[in-house]
Amino acid sequence: MANQIWAPTDSFNTPMLWINKYLAEKIPVLTGLESFPFFPSTPSTINDLTQYFNQSTQGVAATWDRLIRMRRSPFPHIKQEQALYYFYAQGSAPTDTMVQIQESVLRLMDREDETAVEINEWAKGKEFDGMTCKFQFHRFRIYQLEEVRDIIDFGTARTYGGNKIIIDFEYHQMQDIINN
Image (cartoon, rainbow, N blue to C red; front, side):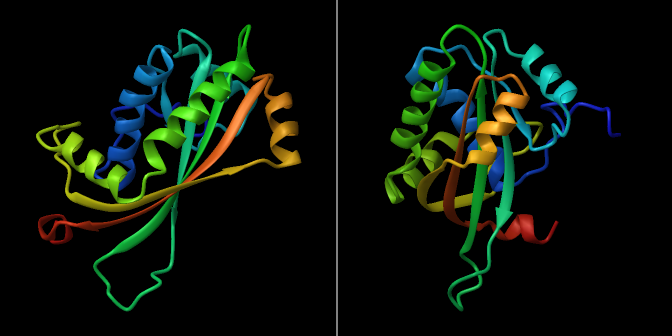
């Protein structure tokens, strides 16, 4: 399993599935880039990361990790989570590509309930891997992280451009997904 690369069809109906699909569809529209792969945060070696980049025609890829958070209120039905995204770029203008991606994520995801309404509307009637959206989103915020360690990691992986963004979001899940 350590050498196996995650396939985009290896999904489970989670809020992350819907956020990833939304970003994968919208970022190329805003940036003019072709679509690029979104993978769970599994590349633990440069070889794995290189294989991910091979699936992108323009040297752009994104990895994500789901960060489940403690509920801040006694109301148990509204969940709060964070999605941690690493965006990587190689090529002739990786810094420009990162600025375009960062700005696109900011414009799409940092509008609180307006973003939630847009994603809820976008997800209506969509189906991925035989699944429909079982989540109602409420609020989104984003944060950008810059750390010296990231610069070292990006340089080591020879990606030449990278960005780390956290998306904080709230949602509730439909009753029928709870009982499955």
